[in-house]
Structure formats: C-alpha cells, structure tokens
Length: 80
Image (cartoon, rainbow, N blue to C red; front, side, top):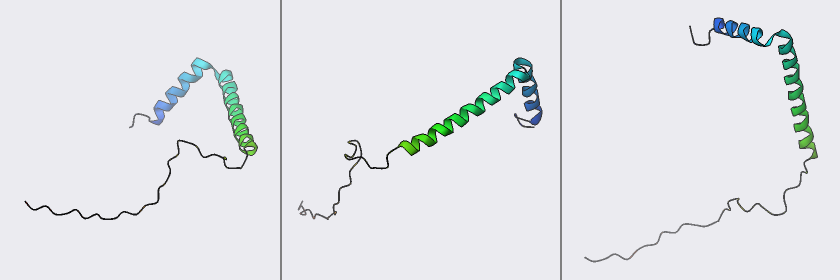
C-alpha cells in the first residue's frame, strides 16, 4: 500500500464533493476547459501574427564564436 492508494483518492474525492458540492464542481470544470481553449487559441494566433523575419541586429548578449588555431609554443629550457 502506497501513500496514494486508490482508497485515499476515493476519500479525497468524497471530501472535495462535500466541501464544494457537485454543481460548483461542474461549473469549475467547464470554466477550466474554457480557459484552456482560450489559452490554446491565443497561443495559435500569436504564432500566426509573429513575423518570420530574423532580427536586423543580433542581440548584444549572445556569445560570438572566434575562429582560431592553437599552436604549441616551445619555451627555452633553463640550465640550473
């Protein structure tokens, strides 16, 4: 038996129904559904309205790559 056994979920569901009532839970479910639909619609229209052109000036905080080759430098040997 785990901490979230099916019996625990039944008890939690009964408590929620007793506290909020079935009518309020129905309206809450439909409100959440409408909010999700509105969010998806807003996200889709935002992507369609966005211009597909890259920005003219690159952002200043973006790192730049430097092309270089590493060369081994030989140091003179010391005589101690």
